[in-house]
Length: 129
Image (cartoon, rainbow, N blue to C red):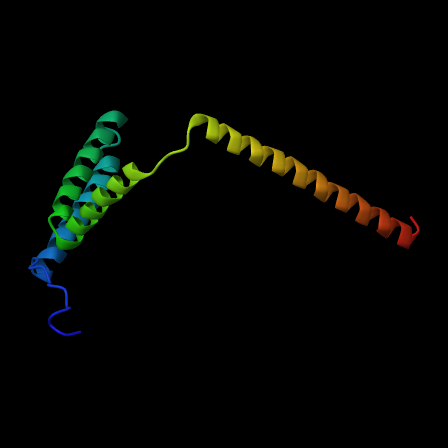
């Protein structure tokens, strides 16, 4: 590629900073899970779950500061925008489609049962049973 068509590289954080941020986030998650089990006898489960969720949110915020974390959250935002653009089927279309699936399933099962019965009858006739 020449310089005219090459995309411009964004000035991101140094690789060591990105690695350090992701390592801190991973360590926070590991520490949160460890604390969840460490305080098993001292705290009731809902308190431990809330603590684990808080640590997970903070770790996500730390990870989001890295280049790959910010790219991931940008991807989540863009995928949500695309999800909103989807034209979802109406209730009636959903019911009609589900009914067709049930009908086709029943018809194919009857067809396969008939084939099975005919092949079984043919084998019995050949074997003489």
